[in-house]
Length: 122
Image (cartoon, rainbow, N blue to C red; front, side, top):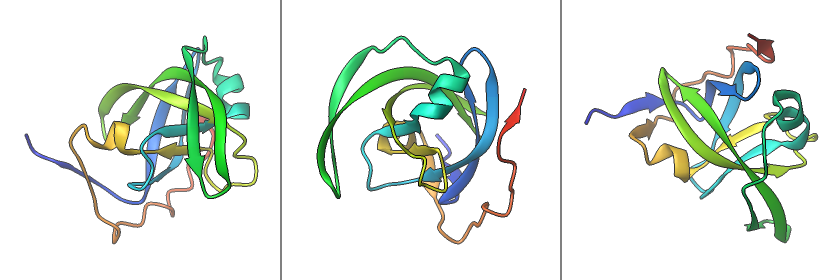
């Protein structure tokens, strides 16, 4: 299987009741995906399928987890996303290893942050 090369910032489509295309942070140090509670609410993601204990720089937190379909470079993947307060973060979606292990190769020299296609609803 050929690997799909992506950058550390990548344009993604995330689908709930509506679909939004925006930039997401790709994080090989994160096991799981995260989405801002505000964006999850806008997309009407849910129901909560479980809760997860997430370890981060601030310690541990219990977060609700929902399922969503994310599309990266034409590849659609259903995955779990923990809900977090990402209001102070530049990117409301963080993509972790649970999605990346589906055949993606990260090239840090690819700078897709210039594709400022934030919040294009379709």
